Length: 378
Image 1 (spheres, rainbow, N blue to C red):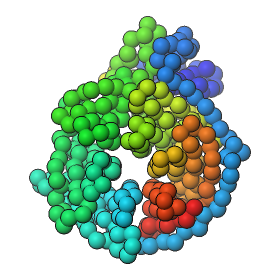
Image 2 (cartoon, rainbow, N blue to C red):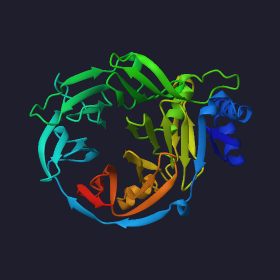
Image 3 (cartoon, helix red, strand yellow):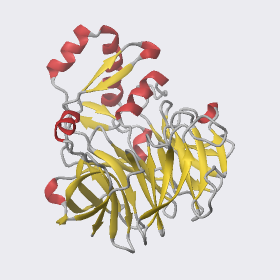
């Protein structure tokens, strides 16, 4: 058995034999990993780690949802969406402005901000949104510049209220979610842990979710933890009240529920439970990974309420999405114990969602030829 990220995955003998003959250098890494997980199935790291699986029939209920769609001509290629009380915040990857504030009562864009550019009051991109701790502001994370920016929703200023440049200590962060006013947490591109907590000066405060170690218990080198990070990359959503982080995995059908107080991780796997197929490339510091395009991808986006987790489930391959133009047509709902509750079947394809429990509405960005905002009552 081959265990990756402490998830047991079966490999065919022929695959291993071919790898040993075709990629001598890469085989060394494979053998190290094989030894690591076969020799240490219950090492000290696993005390905080647990896996559960589920199947389609485990959902307690299945419903079909129909939507109303609104098109906003000024929002080109919408990327992410966040519910912010009386407003919706939508980001764009290719518009002149990175953020659009939509007033729910009128369903009109009432403000544009985050000018895209390289100037002091501009941002290179709006890769991720985070609600932060102030109900009048929202934070963006720039993947290109590794920079956090805070914007006001309520006033007319389109410039950032403040920026935090991610320095060398946090440069490997691929996401950013505020835990409290003095600390944020980021998914790590390399390093012995999945996540690291930083203060506002970008100094490391804590780490969460250790990757597997060597057979001697030593941390793996950065080029190998990079492989684990890439294979488990996905979207993060944070419940500040629960101090719980949700990390959805796009490459496989799994997501993690991470208790930041205890460090415990519950990994929920399903409903496909497919064999992870990938190819290692390069060697040494240039070691990389390519996931087989025939694999059905897992979870593209997540939104959480005080008691439930909502996930966009893909369940299709890259080629299928390219040929059909369909991304997610299912929203899975779980509780914070990883129990599957609801499978919502949608009347259209979506790529991101924001849930408002009080309104009983799901706001979603459509993945269609002319993308817009879909509103589902649930």
